[in-house]
Image (cartoon, rainbow, N blue to C red):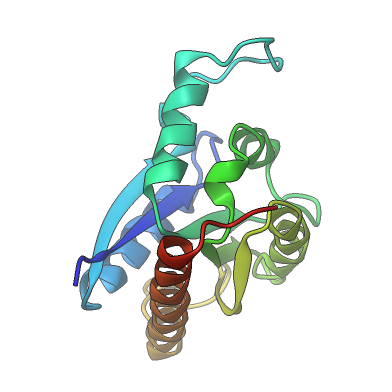
Length: 184
């Protein structure tokens, strides 16, 4: 069986962000899971326009292409003011059909709230795009943990559960799309 193509999307573009470090940790966890081909999609690498143009730019087309090729997603997102970053919403909106009938999981982070307000709002956005969000979340509290908030057995277990759910949904939806194209 072909490996499930998982895209790990780093949703923050802020200088000094924790998202790239957390994404690297999650990609390492995903590397221990059988049957996955992982790609990192870092929004900081895209030169998106400040406004939404009449025609897609090369960066917009490239991002939509990455979404189209992936069969499952993990969105790594901080929580800013009880929501997710504008850079992430901008990128999500550059694709539409590419998200449909694919599973999405979340690795969220924050101080105290662990990013769960952002995840709740992202679930609503992805439901509108006909994507399937999985139940479990990897939630990182940046204020906890020595020597790192990522060095806990609980987070490693959470990552394993999330990856198991994504694989199940990803393979089931891959088969379903092959048997009958999704129509919205």
